[in-house]
Image (tube, rainbow, N blue to C red; front, side):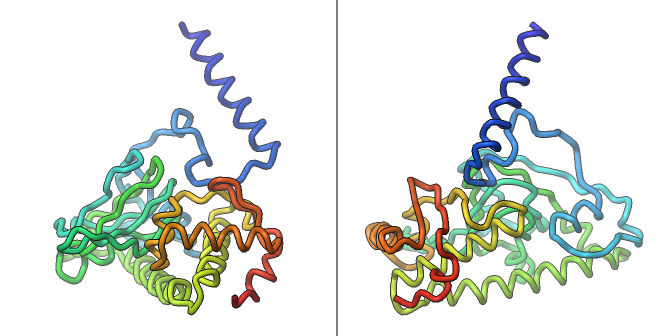
Length: 264
């Protein structure tokens, strides 16, 4: 029985190696097989700093504190709309989306998230979340409980500094996203979206030129205020113009500079 299990794990490692050697498109969902991921109970503040890509070292009272982890399968929620705020979350692996559901049942995708992103800041103001965060792939997040963030007498200057920085970065990203989703022409929106995704993959150490989109074209259209058909036409047009190659969700940016200069 043990020999069979070892052989299975070895086969998975060989398969992963071959996929890497063939330069397969990078995806948060494929970065590490679920069955081979190292299991642990939590992360230190220094670990959280690295995930957020914050340059600095933890030196205060919280530097030895361990923050718990939470795993989710694709389709599960980190938190739902109207749920009580219980803390912030840092994406350790996987891909997610933020969604707002209106009274008539219609939905708006307002953001996509990957490794190193901070989730849940929307709940600080009124102590409840105004959007839902759903896992697009199997995900792993680090929980920063509200009791550690806002309890009286807390003494964790390092954590506060990191969170202020991360929230400021999130606001900046949201402002940049506005320019992506409000371009005059639909094909320009799609071009800018691909460049936005390219930058996100570069931030997590993946190729910025070849990657796998974790979201559906319907989600992309919702995020860009476009129909599914319009997204597909825009992708086909960029493909025919030689700026990208696309096969299902795998995208290769053939001419990033031309894509940046593209204005429809």
